[in-house]
Image 1 (cartoon, rainbow, N blue to C red):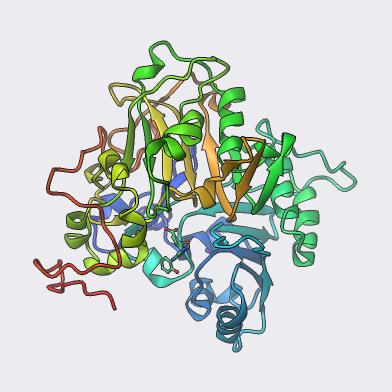
Image 2 (image 1 turned 90 degrees about the horizontal axis):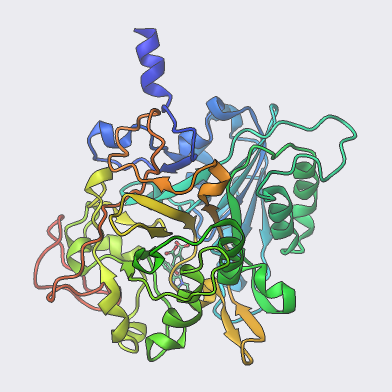
Length: 458
Ligand SMILES: O=C(O)c1ccc(Nc2c(-c3ccccc3O)nc3cnccn23)cc1C(=O)O
């Protein structure tokens, strides 16, 4: 039985894609097999921790410290955040009892930008690991929401005296990660840039898709945000016969202001990016399906209306863009047992007309907003990005495939399949005429949620 015990307590992980969902409290056991809790990520099973860096937006420092196993609880943790003034003071105050926790404030010089990036840099005795994820470092983000992550392989240390460009991956992940870290221009990150240079990242098969605040011109325009994604799709995917019938899917947990009509950004520059496949000069208009929870999805969720506290779509923004809601589809994820675990994960993908194959897949912190993805300005000669964002792109060519088959039953995880574990149901389910998008700052008092409560925002 010790074998069974060991089997049951160490998650059998899908090694192909290294894409995992968070565990969700209250699901049948099978739907959490292969899913990971934050305590799994920080467990000695993945390495003997020396120091870590936590890039995130929202922090509960005392809760975070408790997620480390006791033997690692005093190891230095560097927090990369975007808080300023009183918010920064409150954050630093949280760590007053924890001298091993230090802080670095990411510069946010453009209005309305946020430090949205969620990443763990884990330095072990045995080597180095990167985790890029969608969860904040607060209990609620790891309880009953659908969240996801990419977990890197263990990167071994390079032999002494290796040249810095050693340890590069076929997807140039090492160069791109170092450039992203350098974009903070933060002295606290210098020693981490140096440490990563000393490790072998060559087994990485995903491309980094990052956003860093700024106004970019010329070749710098393709380094960040959606123009970076367009560049990667242009270089590393191929045209598909009948691609105009291959839908684009965007799935997210918040929405920015998209302008008075679809041509302002969504069906213009953003659609141009999402429909790029290789170097074809066609600009098809395939279906675009946007997945965002309806009020009913939230009301009937495991958390009930409080799930909507992490779906910050405001009435002020929504009323300016009613045209957007015709693209919307519900959150339905029976295949992962997560139809009632509201999404905080963000994913974008290009699927075949029969929803059995993927041309590419992106998991990211970036919601549907110009702040996150960037927007062209000055007659398309400049792109402006407001926020820090981070995600990873899967393209079939990096896995010696033409397309990714989709695994329609990703749970319980079976290391046998080579299918990509898309976490929600395909095809997407359109809103019914009565469905409305969840808006977080209006009241819902007609019908109670799963906990018998109504929603009356202050
Ligand atoms: O990922 C996400 O969906 C996400 C979305 C927004 C966000 N921040 C944020 C919030 C807000 C949302 C929820 C609880 C507290 C908040 O302050 N309100 C605004 C207003 N304008 C810009 C950013 N805003 C943070 C995250 C995240 O979880 O990182």
